[in-house]
Length: 179
Image 1 (cartoon, one colour):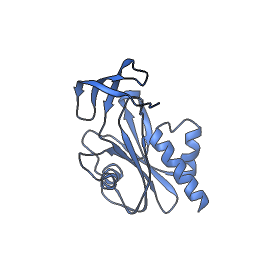
Image 2: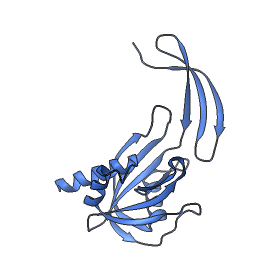
Image 3: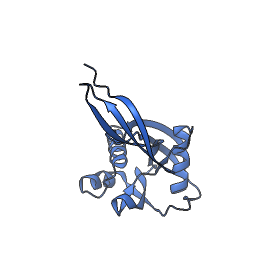
Image 4: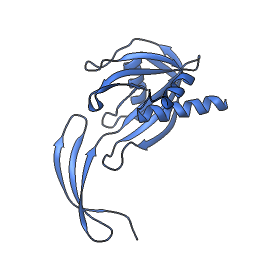
């Protein structure tokens, strides 16, 4: 038996600057019908920036949807047709002023496939050089350099609760632990 849900109809509810919302009427595998609320997102990147001292560069910013300051890896939305590594380079420089000579794709994943199409590409950036800090006009960030081991511990202390950051920090910690 196929688990696929076939779309019967789609109704666009909202089309915004970052996301769109639609409702799909679907035919379920058993023949019944249901509705799915779907947030469409163009995708994003996250950057695990590790310097020569095994410190990770992070940003602290207020996140309105959860009404609190979050400690996160640099990240941002993909522009239409933008290459993921180019987006990662742009976001790292905008948010921290850093550039990197070495880029490795870690992985990609769907952030919340139960209701959103957002895919996030994680990169590790090394061989860092400090340049000019130039955040977007509507971004207010505090840039922090944290020992990787401290960031890893902060996950289990509940101080880092952002999903992309947790995945990225754990990856970097395990990679550097193995040499």
